[in-house]
Every structure is written in C-alpha cells, then in structure tokens.
Image (cartoon, rainbow, N blue to C red; front, top):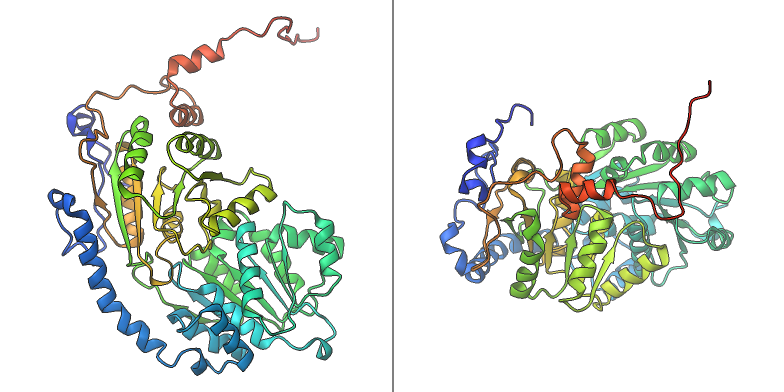
Length: 497
C-alpha cells in the first residue's frame, strides 16, 4: 500500500472533508457495482435490499441444491452418523463439506479454504467421528486433537462433536485457559477420544504429563490464520512435533496467507488443497455499507442506526477493551439486553455471556475481535463495526458472524474521514465496493477544521488514547500536571556522589 498519494491539504480545510478520501481498488468491477443504485436512491434501501437478495438466491440456490441433491448419504457415511445429522437438522451438505469429507475419510492431508459461515466445523468433525477406532481396539484413547484460537471456539467445536456423536460412545474434552486445570486433569484421566483446545492450555497439559499425544492419528488446525496472527505459531509447532509423524493433518481457514502456506508445507504431507472462495471471500448474502462520520459523532449515529434498523440480534465490534466497556455501558442506557465481551473478562463471565447470547437473551453484544472468529449464532442479523478493523481479514471474519449458512445479513462500518485508506484496503481484499449510506436528518460530519487532539510531537500511542477517549490536549495536560494527593510526597532520586 506504499506509494499512495497523501490527502491534499486543501481538501482537509474545505467542507468536502466530510467525504472519505480513498482510492478505488483496481481489481476489476465488483459483481454488485453494476446494478447497485446511486446514493440518491438510498431512501429506497429496504426495496433495494429485497431486490438484491432475490437475485442472489435465484442464482445461488440451484447450484447448492445440485451439489447436495443426494444429501449426506452420497458421501458414504455410516448409519449412526446419518442419524445424528438428521437429529441435528443437517439436510444438505455445503460445498466445503461435500468436497472435504470424502478426502478426510480416505486419510489424506487436506488444506481447506472456504467462506466464513459455510460449515467448516462439521466438515472435519464428521470424518473424525467416522475414523475413530472403538476403545477396545486401541491402546491409546486420545485419537484426535483440534487446535483453535479462542476459548469460545473451543467450547463451540466441542459442542459440535457432542451433537454429531449422538448414538456413539465418544468422549470429547475442551482444554482452554480461564478454567480450573484440576477439573480438566480429572476428565483427561477418563481417557477421552477427542480433545479440542487452545495451543497454550494444550502445551500446559503436555508439560504436566497429563496429556499424551503419542496415539493421535488426526490433527486439526481450525482458523489457522488467526492462530498465527496472535502468535501461536511456536506453540503449534511444539504440539505438532509431539504428535506421531504418521498422522493425518487437516488445516481449515477462511483465508490462506503465506504464513499458513509455509506451515502447511512444513508439517503436512502432499496435502489436497480445496479452495471454495477463490474470488470473493465475503459472503454474497450480506449487504455491506459504510457511514462517513466524525469520531465524536459515532455514538449518536449508532443510536440512530439501532433505532432505524431494530435488529433481531447484533454484534457491535470495537477495537479496544476499554472502548468496548464504555460503549456497552452507554448503549445499555438506551437499549435493552446489552452486554459486553472481551478478553479481560473472567472465563465464567465469558461463558455466561455467550450462553445467553446463543439463547437470544442478549440482543446486542458489544465485543472485541475475541468473538470475530468461528462463533456461530444463527440469529445474528446485523454487524456494526464501531471501529474499522486494523487488519482486512478481521473485517471478513467480523462480517461473517451474520449471513451464516446462506442466511441474509447486514453489515455497517463507521469510518472517520481519516480512515479512507483502511477502507480502500478492505475493499481490495474482498474485491467489492462498500456502498456509502446516510441517515436522513443526521449530521455525521462537521465542516469546521479539525483541532488536533494531542500537541504536535507527542507520542503516537498517546494520541490514539486521547482520540479514543475523546479527551482534548488541554485536558490531558491538566491531568498530567495534577499535584499528588495530600500526605503523599513525590519521591526524588539523587545520584550518589
């Protein structure tokens, strides 16, 4: 992205500053840009959505039905698995499931890439259940291990194993931090066949000698790109080296950047590559829009947007934990059933929030990217990016929380005038132009010249903090010069002579 022309100074001083300055991507015309209405037709937004969704379903449904016309029975699954799938309500396999399940059952390594919300979890759970050996025929009970990036995803994948193993004597354990390790050690002594966990807690059990991977025959790396992004690569490699060399490795992700490819080449044997999202990595059934808004006008715009849309269930993504708490607290004063979610919460609180959100008792979840990967809640109708994500792939996964399994959804992103380059990078990543919308009667941007929040020459991190908290440079300086409380002296250190 180097070499982009800077924002012209004259543009920043004129009323046109209200428009996001960005460079349109040069990746060819978008599929939806040809028939998309102009900004003047925004007032017909509901009618436009209805027309777009109708055309999408008309073109996509026959292909999906043709791919799974004979259902899961055509994949050569056992009667017990077919019965569990019917009990769970799974009728037709998705493309990733139809392509990956037969290969995984045959025992080859597979690198699968597909859009978020297309059933990747079931595509590796089903073949693992098919390939498990009965307890009496194996000496080592632990036969499969799945590594996931977050605690919430570990719980969700474990639930998928329990749901699809109905009628089988298969035990699955979730290994993740934030929970007492003694309870997990007790469950490991019962010798479960499948373990699902985060790399950090799995390594902890290996170091304690409570987890034996010598008999593992199948290893799954789910959301591999996210695990590498947050620094789990050394832990993943240590775990893979503890597993037998003669094993099957399944790697699944919505995106396959170069680090994931290098990991696959090093630890997988001649993997079969399945790519079901070669062009558009964002789901077509999700309508995606953006607002141009000043930073201090974001929350009023959020209230107006929630009042207009009346979402069934929604997730509002923020970039920092501090802002997540603040937005959840302020929004709870105007909207019912609001809760916050981020990594600093205790694990029992996080579990309780996710349980209530899946049950529909929480209508609005304000969260960081901790819930941006793999969380499957079918009732989510709206995604609102209160802060534009730092990385393009995070946007893909945020938006993928809605529009799950072919359902429809709407995503809005609040973009400040200075964040135009970030918006451009997102559009280039998804090969699609986001459409700008406005709320009637709401002034999202100010025509007055911008006043810097921090004096020139200040540290960039302090500038970001002041910007996020809405503090002016004068307020920050006043706090800095505040005298110490009475009775507390300022300690001064003197150099020894």
